[in-house]
Image 1 (cartoon, rainbow, N blue to C red):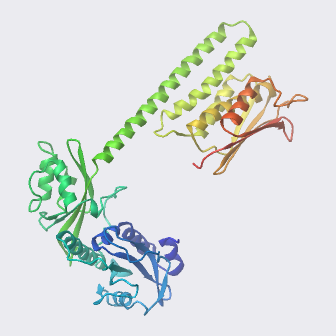
Image 2: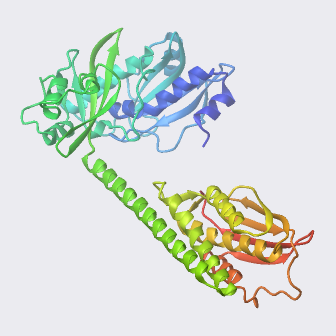
Length: 485
């Protein structure tokens, strides 16, 4: 399905500011759909002005939908939808007198012109399914009156709010809890869910008739300095969100000032009890901190092991034993690098390019040959379960290249990396003395190559190949399946 931006670019010459206004409207019009118990469709005029294009659609969560199929991308000629034409031409909200029965169910149609600054950019079609119509409750009457006020604000260019603060990832919805305030900030209606949320904060009286700002401050800031944002939001004077706490209870508030005809007539305050959500977030933060601390301690322990091995190597007089311990130090060090990186990130995923560069530096520090190691390409982000064995593989391949390819000579080792969504390809190529005659990877007794083969093939389910380089030296290719980053 094409996006709003794609449809606007394809069918109109709408300027960026108007497009941004429509994006803001569509990002927040679930509120209007739920208060109206109605489907919303956003129509814009075509470039030639001879047709209307449906660029966005929203269904209500509070009532039955009219459109079970998506209509985004539909095009209707001017004249086919008289209410849309009238709303656009006369710059007013248009309501149809009798329900439309053409779809088999009674549908009431309304159209709302969308204004930005001093001009109109689109028309909202509001379609209400009347099949389950009944005598409305006070809650439904409050919803409908609030929807009417919001629709008027849309037609006057006052909604959405251009200066509204950042909306939280999951703002309160109409069904979470709704409070209607008058001009003075007193509660004129409280939905059952909103009242329940305030009961959990410690309210024992009724909300209706109270000043919401003072009541909320009394519940949450008794004996403490009052948060100014809270007073602005709870009194409905500014379009903003905030959270209030009383004991272990956390309630999220969002204010929507109602400004109709140039004056503020009151406000809507959406209320959501987010106590359990915040508790789970705190648990996750604690868990993340614990995991990072574990990685930090593992890194410290590995460095201690490496230091002990290095100390033991210095005491050995047998060259083979000293060399074996030094190789073990490098292997332990490569694992420690991964854990050190993980100790600084909240997720079990690391930027492996940084790890690869540190492994390269570590190889150069212990090499007795004058070898330049270069990396071409990026590893990108890798999960810890892949990063640790890949770090060990890279350490072994670089060490083999430096130790067996050049001995005490000089040369170049190139690490060529390419990555797709499904796999990681790494080639370690050197211009050294090359493979010994009759070399067979399967029959090789080299501990380093055995470790590489075990990690690549056995643990990572990848492929390993060792072959002579095209221009001399040796080339080792590793292919590892990875998940998209």
